[in-house]
Length: 616
Image (tube, rainbow, N blue to C red):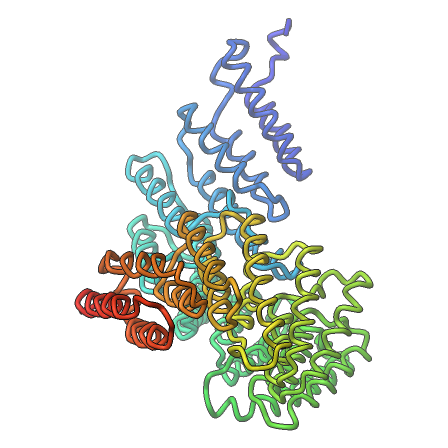
């Protein structure tokens, strides 16, 4: 404070910030930047002590892949930087784009590692869409045209990484849009005179891979290889390049091509042309490709080839040639091929054998492994074996294996197994257990949908009184479950499927108050802006008609009147349903005992006429 010779300069702050950045302490970096900004504001230090490098270093500190809130903090610092009239340069944008890519990659990693539904793994405040990336990029281009920013190859690599890893396509986005975005990016890069390198090429391959176009990723790879073989070392393929090529074919489900690429990697490893030889992850890519293939010739061979490939992995690992000892993903992929490409009276037993072998090798099965095994027994219509698998999974989950928490699909498969074998008692008991489970454990709404769909498919009421009791119980409890979930997750955007499942359950089960309950649920949904489609109207009308309650007639008339006023867009979205709607509602009305049947039928015919004219 007293000696001007010791007054901190921008270089002083830069050095301290750099030290904290290397120590992976981004908060300390930001504290110094904000402290410096406040001192300048108070007139204690001249503005000359601040420059864009201070912000760049701090933003870069926040972009570390392990920092959960890094993206949001980076964006906050970018706003602060612009508020101080410092122009972001290439280093600033590089850091921001890498922060976006790291954030999205981290979300996917958390989802995979913790076995969470995607929505639980996403911090909505930290998500950036491809449109946001495009906006930042255009801002950078404007600054480049004004001479304030000079992007380089690293910048375009960062932009491609951000574009590749951004959240799934929006409603207004499609593959063509993303493809055009990538092509525009490269046109701009050439306009700026930036020469691409292997990192840019690898990111471009990853972008094509994500769009499901492995042939274009292959074209980029071959072009880079040709350039490298002509002596340009900037295009020497890295280990990441080869793996990106491998994963592009694997994700596309071309097992033969994936195996060919793995062979290429093995040859390169033998020549010491790779950073490291292929490991289990690369070998698993071949198995994953077999599970996804839609090529009929490959489907017929999938299970046999995967069995052989698993044995090859074990042999290569035992010989010490590669670190490719099969893991849980290897065994699960082999089981998937047996379950998906089903061979009657063999697939389930083979899946069981693989599962036992995996446990004998000390490999802990994950939730997907159990789900695949249950699917195999489900195809053989063997609910007893499905129940054994489920109970075995629950036992290990309760012993502390958190990743084995049963999913909604597994509960639904159990119920469906018992329903399909006509064991309604066990199906309802399973549902009762699910209610207890749902009450004690945090379940995301998406986990609920499979269970409610099974309830909606429950067979209509038959004569036995015990079935009537069970069906009525299930419909009411399903409604309570839906309402409970809406309270827990009021902002969920996908409740219409749940709503229709419960309404259909009321229509099928002839619950004493089914019409009344269904109508109340329908109106509550309408008042909370849950999307209602034609099936929603169909199921609530059916439920009220089946109730045979004369008090429901005004409500039926009101719903039909509401349909008459629906806009053209509603009928366009429901064009494939209105024929079934008119036929089913009319048939139920004719079989009912309402006094106003003729009037209701006329109104129903009007709805059909409006639907036909609007959809046309």
